[in-house]
Structures are given as structure tokens and as C-alpha cells.
Image (cartoon, rainbow, N blue to C red):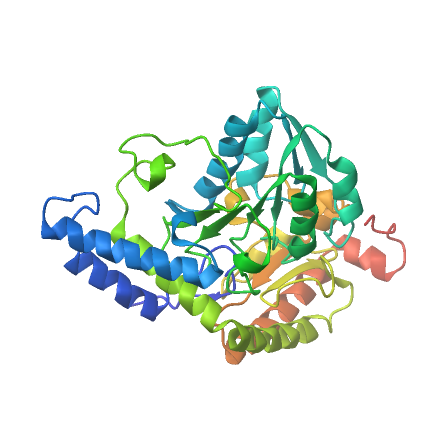
Length: 400
């Protein structure tokens, strides 16, 4: 007997593969199985042609040139290639890099490794809404700064940084800008031709494509130099060795095209779902939205339920699939570094969960989620001595 799966509300962690993407991927897997680097027979020629077409498609989707797309295994590798690549290529010019304390670990950990090698890293501290200011960034840039690495849309809170203004500033200062856009594509307009970004990381599985493939945009005008991190074979202009996975590349290109084409209609529908979900949950007392109220994508709600442990809430709701933060931090016992960097204490962070909607979320599922969440939060508070004390006005004020 098949077990009914829970309602999926964790689309910031990963997304279901779109059937249109899967169809393209299966064609590539079954009809073009040659190595695209094999130039001595039709099997290789056909695979190379399919990869070339997909690269053109991906470049068109984000307003880039074909030669500016470097295929990777995902956004983590793309982030690593951008950061280590710039550090290696420009270290004689300077050894100062600026990032933000709320970045994904795929940016923070490479920066921490570079610190061990003698680089100076500045970690900008956001405000309570998760935003950093142009003034902060401008004050942090020095004559030694070679790179600014900032996430466009935060994976835990959905908060958007003002990347167009940041890009204008970094270009004026002669500093390279790397943007982790894994959570931006498909949620906000992304057009590289209109914004002076130097490096941009992308991931397929955040936009209804398969896991295991991503891309790094590397600006050619003006040209950005990188030191390769994976050697062997000389593929992709020598920046990333290894056999190109034809089917993965074809699938990601299709996912990018769909994400950009359907952007407006999809975001409007998801925004209605999120508004309905928030209105249903906000009927509860002592429920707070983490992150900026308006500078955020419509797909995400990061919510603090005071006096309710987030992990306990997830365990009490097997009918729903959601998370307490980044999937990449699931093996760690510490609370969200993103919320702590925004100024929230551990207790607040431990009472917070992330609910993220997507292309295949329905209004009926949102209605069910509201009913289930309200019931379980009410139940858990009913057995909480802290909640009872708070209701009796004996609890100390929450530190936020």
C-alpha cells in the first residue's frame, strides 16, 4: 500500500523537475549519448551540437553571451570557482574580499579558507530586515579589495538585495562583483545585459531542473580572469575540465528558459498563495515574519512562532514537508546563522521555520497547511509552561 506523501512546502531547498524539462532531458539521454568532446564521429558531433544549442539557450535566458557560460555541477561549485578563481588570478592586485554574514555556506566557507591563506575578509552585517546598505559596502571597499560576493535572494528568508545599485557601485570602484543568483532566477527578472555583474552563479534544481548541474556566468567585456579549480581535458576554455553532461545541460537550459518566460504569471500566482497562507497563519498570536516586509520574493515565508520549537513543530506535522532553514545546514545542530546575523537570538531562531511555495503548489494545499499549522501551534503552546507564563504576563520580553 502506497504511503501518501506530505504536501511539499520546501521549494527553496529544491524543486520538482518540470515535465517539460524532463522531456528534453530524456531526449538528450537517449539520442545523444556520445561524448561532446569526441570530434571524430557523429555521436560526438551530435552531442556537441546539442550542448552548443543549450548553451545559446541559457545565455539568451539571462542576457549573456555564449562564451560567458561555464557549466558546473551546481551553484556550490560555481561559487567556489568564482571566489577561488578571482582570489588566485587577482591576489597580486589585492587580497581583500567583501561578503555578507547571511550568505550561503558555499560562499562563507571558501572565504573562511582564504582567510587561512592570508586574505582579509569583511563580513557585512545586515539590519534586522536582512538588508545591507550601499553606504556599508562603500565604506568597506579599500584599495586592496578585489571582489564583492553577495547573494541576490537569500535562501532562508527570501530577502532581496539591491544588486543593480550594488553592481553600479562596484563597477565604479573597479571591484569585481560575484552574485549568487541560485534563488533569484525564476523569482525576479535577471538580465545580465542590463546590470554590470562580473560573475553570476546559477543552479538547475532551484528552477525545476535536475540536481547536479549549474552554471557560472563569467563576464568577457570587460574580461574577468579566473584561475581554474578543476583541471583535466581543457574543456570550457580551460576554466573547468571534465566531460560535459549533455542531458543535464540541455535540461538546465530548458529550465532557465521556462523560468524566465513564465516569470510574471508564476510570481503573481505564488504571491496570492503566500498572501493567503500568511493571512491564515497570522491569525495566531505572537507570530512574526522574519526578514524585510517588502524587499523579498513571493515564494518564501520565514516565520517565528514564539514559544514553539521549530523542530518540534516539524515533527508534529508529518503531513507537511517544510524546513527550519537551509537544507545545507540540516546536519548541524546550531540555529540559523542567517537569523543570528540579522540580530535575532538563538531562542527566536529556534522558533522559526521556512515555508516555501513553488510552481506546483495549489490553493487547496495552502488551505490544508493553514489548518494543520494553526492546530499544531495551538496544541504545542497548550503544553508549554513558557506560553502559559507569557499569557499570565510573567514571561520575560523576547530579545529580538
